[in-house]
Each structure stands twice: as C-alpha cells, then as structure tokens.
Image (cartoon, rainbow, N blue to C red):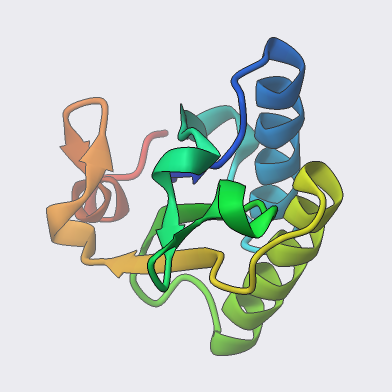
Length: 132
C-alpha cells in the first residue's frame, strides 16, 4: 500500500536500483509494518552535477544525496517508528551511496485514509468493508 518515490544522486544501474528497492522494502516492512507485497518503489536518478546544496553541486562537493517520501495512512505508525525509520534509512543509504551530504531527506507522509488508496478503493473503504 505505501508508495515510495525516491530521488538519488547517482548514475542509473540495474544493480543499484535493485539494492535500493530491497533496502526500502526491508525497512518499510520491518519498521513501519507495511505489507511488502503492497509496497511500490519508484526511483529517479539525478546527475550529481544537477543536484545543488547551498549553491554547490554534489559533484563539486564530492558528496552523494537522496530524497524519498513514503506515504502511509495517518495514525498507523508512532513517532518512535517514524524516527527509527528515518535514522535507519539514512544509515542504509550511506552504505549504498558512500559519502552522503547531511542534506539528504526522508519524508514519512501521513495521509488521510479517506484520501488515499489503491486498486480503486480508499483505505477508509477497506477499513469499513474488510474482505472476508
């Protein structure tokens, strides 16, 4: 059910895409308790020459960075779970990308169940009408 949209400052490769996907699936399942089979990951690669922090490109700084957001239904995760998720995601991406710029971001978006869903149904509808 969650969808993760990630931007990463690296050259695209199948191997890196697979490692990023597996990392995000593992973290999202283990920490946030989301179902792996319902989790989607979309990866966008950005050339480090086109990613700027404080007016300098990551290429100039010789740093890597990432940004991702994950949408989850409001009130399904605690503050502590979200804090742990952000911390572990940063550490994982440091392992994947190397020298990370501290301006790398994780955004856990709490979205209303009435305004979010998949397969043509909102999460609120699924809550009110559970499958047998």
